[in-house]
Length: 397
Ligand code: PMP
Image (tube, rainbow, N blue to C red; front, side, top):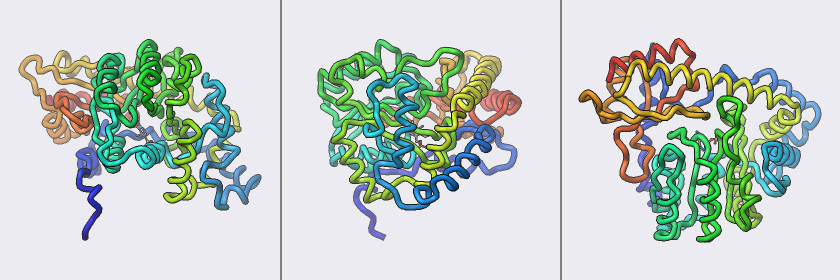
């Protein structure tokens, strides 16, 4: 079959290939990016979905507005306001089919073939693929323990004049990195200085460990940086905190961008499932979210701690990592100490033979991959599996 030229630059992801092997019995997986389905608030979602059907059957089962189900838009605006967003009304956001669709709509509305987009190195693999599908030339901005290096980012913006900069400032996928408060302000200031759109992808911000939330999102901070709100698109999602199967995400953006994105969404899926939206609206209105968040945070924090301790014990100085302060991921760098392996792909292969799956870091870079990196998720394995899996990784290394 003759496929469109735009598919020429896209490869099936190395990670997808690896997932095919995960069905093997006895494998302990640190490979996926899924939340733990055992943590879903099934009772709460069931009750919300029943209320959606009994109280608003027409809305829940009929076609709906492309911008989203109004009661959900209002609940989402209230949810974000509760977390510190200012001057946010239902009209400032649209509901998307997962935040993945928001990324797709940004690609569709903003990228012409050959346009440049700056992403972090490393970044979310599906965003690399999605922006490339629209013909973007991706530029990689380096990160360190405090997230994207803003000195380098500003140089890249000035040199390349990108269509937008895509960042995951809070507990990045795959890096787990947390952008410091100072750098967040710098990002907003440079957006204004260079008139560059910043896309803040924030599916993990609610998953912080310990008592203290991370620094405010770029969206929340934009209230204090004049003119920055007009240069910011913020993507949110219920996937990691409630249930990815609902496919409920959203995007806050300037009105003209929301208009164009809604137009494109109309031709794509007409609207996000009204049943899922009505269920999500009921759920957010039920008051259960704070307890659900507290529970998932506590479980993931404990698993992250268990994995960190096991890694130090079993792999010692053969690896370096910064213990994540939230999210789902641990990002490792092979140091080569003691003559040990420094190739993440090789180690991932050997680890699979030992019965533990993790993903090499290289595919998460759009350029100059750091081949000594690996991503491990601590989200879905329990404490015992984490200790056993890391011990297998110790054997593999
Ligand atoms: N952005 C990032 C950084 C992600 O890690 C993911 C999911 N892995 C998504 C967006 C998409 O999530 P969803 O479409 O389920 O909201």
